[in-house]
Length: 48
Image (cartoon, rainbow, N blue to C red; front, side):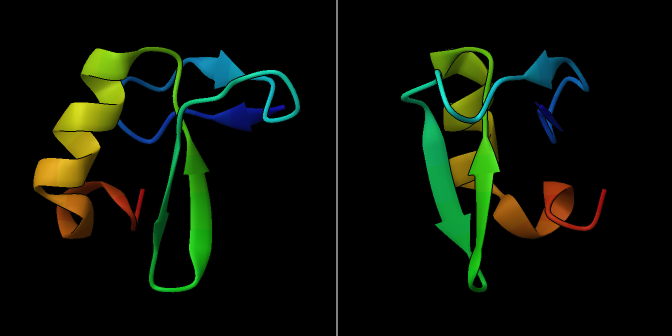
């Protein structure tokens, strides 16, 4: 399990299809809304 960097919800990275890569690291999301938010400003959420 990993934490969604946008909303903080726990996400099973093995089950979700919602992911983005930023600066060589993969980020996983609970919803398409969180993924879209992250993709618009990844630098804002990647350090959380």
